Length: 58
Image 1 (tube, helix red, strand yellow):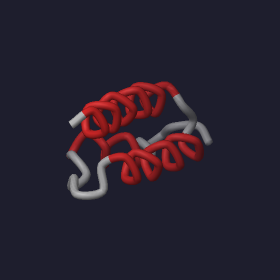
Image 2: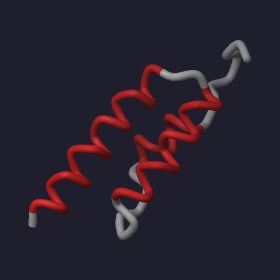
Image 3: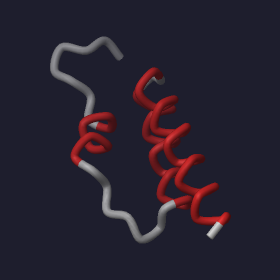
């Protein structure tokens, strides 16, 4: 039970960091989230974080 809560909290922290990161780091952080929540399917928000927006500087 405690492990599940730890994993859930760690995944949230990583998602929060991914929101502020550049595209390369964002993808790596979101892949790390998958290690903490292996049974979870990527949320639509996760996919939006991974895809660069049109007109965004690289």
